[in-house]
Length: 159
Image (cartoon, rainbow, N blue to C red; front, side, top):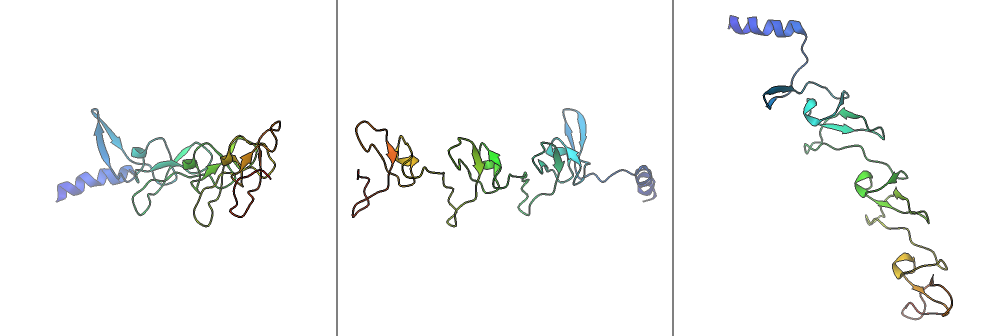
């Protein structure tokens, strides 16, 4: 017992930070010594085994895991530009006007992620582009436009 106390005393005197895990990779020792809030590059550097971005800044920081032991990165709030839905907190990245750029957008009350659609009388190439889901040529010489549906069954018919 005295021998164990003699071995622990030098470690305490060194002021070593707590180590959550020790692994051996290709014949060298890797210590997970960084605490929450410390900068990091890989999960294995952190005591929590969780190294993620926490803002638009690309710098990564050690953070805690969720109760399901997941390591979640910060995601963009609504209004920020995006290229993929995984970047957004709402998991919804769509165009919101005539500009082809995409933005993080809130989901509907039915949890749908809806694309922006052209209003009536805008030029179109396909029904899917229009709010009315109706894109037709009004005359043979005119380009196709988004038009409101009409008739008893709300068909896509020329006026």
